[in-house]
Length: 316
Image (cartoon, rainbow, N blue to C red):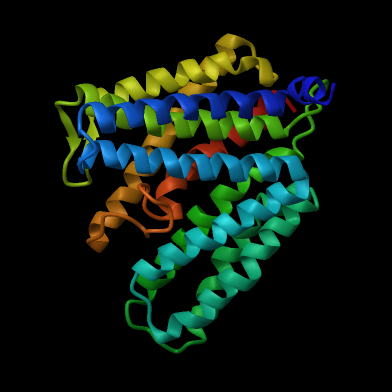
């Protein structure tokens, strides 16, 4: 009876589906490791298996968090923003005069942004960082009395706050949307996460299977035109198949999935350009096979705000 009740929950159904896919991917990875690589080291297969293991951990963490409820979801994304900001600021050049602004970013703007979301204060959390953060950070930096490359340094910190905190905070902000006749806004978070993240996975898979034409080797050596088209198209089908968990019709789910997949792709593309400028491949090494936390959520940082406002404009 308890199992039937659990499986009747749409959130549980999505996670059951995700774990079923992970079992299939794990079985394929094991088959390739012993059937093709004969148990010996193989760059592509080992990388794929490492990514799959990391997905087990990430999906498991998400399942536990969603089981805990609203506060846990907001806290999880606040921690993700903190880690992304840490990775970002560790790669950009800063000076002693920036330390005051960085303290404001970590210990004022980040927690306040997520508090305002927890408090359901849309009128302030929607402008808090783009208006007040962007005005107060240069003021704080100017008090450091270091004018060397001042505009360049201020813009870099503002950009990090925008990408790592403001944009990503729109994921838990979906919980604040009150849609008539739709009582489960947490399902919108799962829709966004699984559609955009599946696009990343399918771009990787299609790129390995069919990729011949490099998209932009100077920015992302591994991305191909075939991977982009196959990944976005497949993930759009994933989005359409999840229409039942959203307030969308199947056609609306497909169009929205297509939109956030394209934005997600360019999110990863832009963040890759920054990495190449800094001369690194990944933002960090926190997640096995994936790189840093920002490598894993870069696509979400561009997709989440647009997804949020599409729903708020047409459904709320």
